[in-house]
Image 1 (cartoon, rainbow, N blue to C red):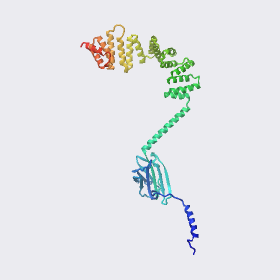
Image 2: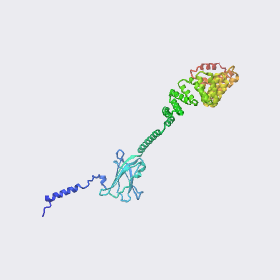
Image 3: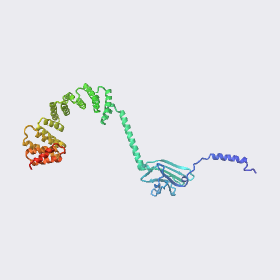
Image 4: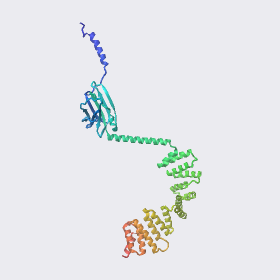
Length: 439
């Protein structure tokens, strides 16, 4: 009988066996969690740390009212108890108001360890129902979850979205500027107060269209607003060369000259503007100021009258004219103007009533009893509006002394002493008057 263990038989057998073994697929060793039957899970946070105390529900598709719930342990692991094999499968959900499932991987193996479900992906807080259905038929199921805090994720997402919106807006703005003409870019810059950039763009537009006087004037105006009054004046002069009757240019030139302390030299320009635009109150006001700066008092007074004619309800114009009338010692007219202004300007009315009373007392000739009575009425009104107005109390006291009403005079003098500053030059005089007044 042939020997079955002879070398001639054993060596070929070993060679064939080795060849067959080398052709078998290599499979990685499975962990205990992956090799044991049941549904197992492991939960970590975004930094890879275990997250204990989280509750997960395993819900049968055919019976959603009968969930099985478990909680993660200290190492972030959990295991569901043995469940029935349900053809429709199971849904799993995290029950937490703090965390949400950010990443998942669901592996299901049959008992022979062949993987027949391997799903993975990422979720956001609003899409937690995006977890795959578990097709469990027994065997092994491993659930690997990475969770994140809802608040932190939402804040990070809001910051990211805000950054994206800002970048998109900047991109759109940049695209818009690329599409804008130099004139449009200049007008856009004016809206934001960037006069220097506006002047540069108007200059660019004017260079492309040198006969356009409007562009040249816009360039001049923006240049003046940027603070370069010298360049603005040169450009404005070019505008007048091209368009001598253009309104508003000479007035602006006067303002730029005023910035350089040359308003007196602007008188001829404003006079020319007055001829072009005779009913413009602003021109009359500018002419009044320029005449005053140039020392032309009579012309300044006449320009003030003209300003009031063109703007009869302008408190500034009325106040300027009242001052002129007071300087001219026309105190009756000054009083009327101050009284009118007081009715138009409640906040500054006390000063106007004081000025009205003072104008009455400063009139030419003898101050009559009637004058003093009108004056004290104005001073009383000033003190009523501003009880600590010492100037009004002082003149009211003096007027009442002139009327022989020492009781009221004493009342106003005492109010003066009460409210006056310690270094007021009139304090000594008023105290002496209080000592001298009959009681």
